[in-house]
Amino acid sequence: SPLPPSPPLQNLNRYHLQLDRVAVFGHSFGAYTALALAGARINFDQLRQDCQPGAMLLDLSLLLQCRALELDPAQVPELKDDRIAALILADPVGRSLFGPRELGRIHLPLLWSGAQRDPLTPLVLSQVPAFRWLGSEDKYFAVAEAASHLHFQRNVGAAIHGQGTAPPLGIQSLQAWIAPPPPALQDYTNALGLAFLHSYLLQDDRYRPYLQPGYAQQLSQAPYHLRLLSPAWGDRFSEFHLPNQTSQTDGSLQPVLSALEQLPLRP
Image 1 (tube, rainbow, N blue to C red):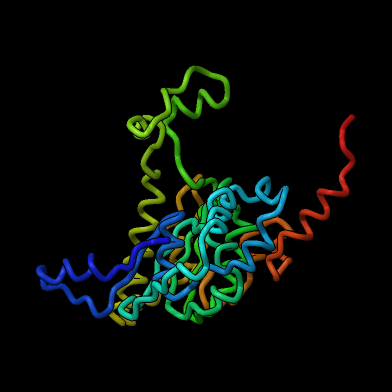
Image 2 (image 1 turned 135 degrees about the vertical axis):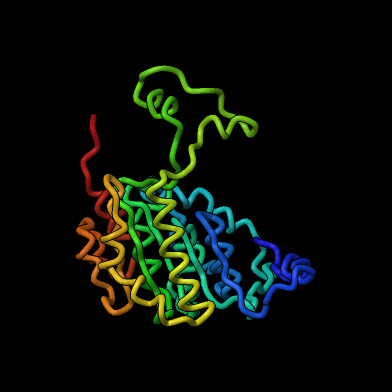
């Protein structure tokens, strides 16, 4: 479980910052932390339902999420901090950790960004259902085509495809494997993040026009074409041309697992 944010926020008081309204940004498992600080609690019933044989083949993030079943529910603290006024999440881990009950408790303005080619938190099976479960009325979903959860250095990508040798993998050599996000993705984060924080943290309505699909289209750069779903569009994920699994509005993994069980095994 993440630690409560109060000590770090209190340490910032010496910089004379306004800390009664803050935004939290989190990527991947850091986005789980952000949702926990916004009021979502671990849903052990949801975890027991989702952490079943075969599920991790569909959603690799369950390798991390299902570890929470080792916790004692009575020892998991309440992490909600009322000073948090907005959330920015990127490729969040947490669909099964929270489920619809806990994500429905999140009513803060929220900017969610996902990567089309994310193998760790699959867009269709993991991110879209979790986004739909959120209780917030002011929620935005941005998707970058051809983007992934992490971006690897060119020599690593070549090695994965059998062309050359990757550098040794270890804690000290992660920089040799992981590359910074492409400049286009950084531009999207900066532009949409700035507009979102001015609109909802500083409550400056002059920035609202920049949180519309048309502006996202102007920002868009090949091959990382950007699409944005704003609150006015509701749940029109069909505009993203995602696979048909998005029609499963309950977000359950069970229909997919059942279908896999019906497949004939190779001799």
